[in-house]
Structures are given as structure tokens and as C-alpha cells.
Length: 168
Length: 115
Image: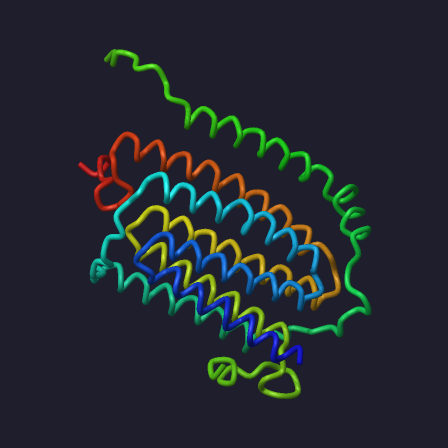
């Protein structure tokens, strides 16, 4: 049953990711991104990380995709047709795909990845909190600073500055 | 489905879900996002594909952490989600500012640094 669910969610995730790339309209792309995120959240639940699935849906589906849709609506760009790709871009894509395949295959051939059996109940909220407030205390504070800086940056960027004369 | 059947993992059966399955899925998702960044011309769609690449890395982290019975990967995903949220906010603000100045979001027409 767990295997079937894995393939279901994997198919949902990958299929919707492909549709994000190929859809002409940016609104459709955002909607498929949402569906793909739902698939990833399902995979997180299968990996005993229900808390992360919840946070992913909250942050991404609730905030990021909504922000994307809002900006698409605000900019009101015409859904332009997919232009034919340039030869050099296609060649670069092919080289990138070949390198990635080589990496995954070498990971399969050269290494032994041990898959431990799952623990009984999965991590609890208490375990997350203990790690976040002991081992990763400094990164948590740095991330807080980063959010503050991002907020200030967004305010500065989106503020209409008074038109000052272009001094050379 | 057939892709996973072609790449059997070290488990008992070819369709058994192990760490390898999650890693292949993660690589596939990353590749799709990468192609989107390379091939698309709309800045907003390029941003969505960047998000896909970040999500692919989180899938690999959570899978490693689950199959090695640790929690550090999951905690890293928290940080990745925070960074991604900050990145999206700043990036979309930049796109809006750019649109206000140039009236386009197509990367082909944003070539002022080229000439």
C-alpha cells in the first residue's frame, strides 16, 4: 500500500512539474506548481514527516503560490506562445541532463545506501524543538535576521522613490 | 512507473520503495526545474521552476533523514523553506520593480546589460 502511494504521489509531483514547465499561461503554471507541492507533501507524510508536510503546504501553498498568483494578476502579462528553443539552449540542457543521469547512476553503482527500517512512530514535535533550540540555535537566529533583512529589502524595493534628478 | 522498474533498487523487489527511489525522484524533479529555468522566457515561470529545484532538494534531505533515522535533514528543510520564502518575496519585488521600469517580464527583452 505504501508503495502504491509512493508511486501515486511521485507521478503527481513529476507530472505537474512537467506541466509547470510547458504550460503557456503563467496562472496555469502556478496552479500546477500547487498540485506538485501537494504531491511533495504526500511524499513527506510517507516519509514520517507530517509536520514538514504541514509546514510545506502552509508556507508554499498558502503564501508562495498565492504571492505568485497575485503578481501574475498584477502584471497582467499576455500569455505569449512558447517560442521555439534555441539550439545552444537545447545542447546545454542535454549536457546537463547527461551529467545528472551520470551522477544518479554512479550513486547507484558505486555506493551502498543503507535503508534502515522505520522507527515506530516517527519524529515528534518535541524532537524537532529540541534540535532547533540546542544544536541549531545559531542558524535559527540567523534565519530570523535574514527574514528581517528580506522584509526591509522588499519594502525598499517596492517603495516608489521620489524622482530625483539624474546627476552624472 | 516504467522508469522506476528500469532502475531497480537494492531492495527485495524491483518496485520496492527504498532510498534510491526517493533520490531518483528528487533528481528528476530537479532536472525538470533546471530545464524550466533554461528553456522558459517568462521571469515568473523561471521563478516557479527555481522553487521546484528547491523542493527537489528538500525531498532528498527528508528521504536521507528518514532512512538514516536522524532528524537533522528535516531540520534543514525548515531552513530551506524559510530561505525560499524570503527569496520569493525579494525576487517578486524585483520583478515588479523591473516591470514598472521596463514594462515587460520576458527575459529576451531585458538585455540592457548586453550592449
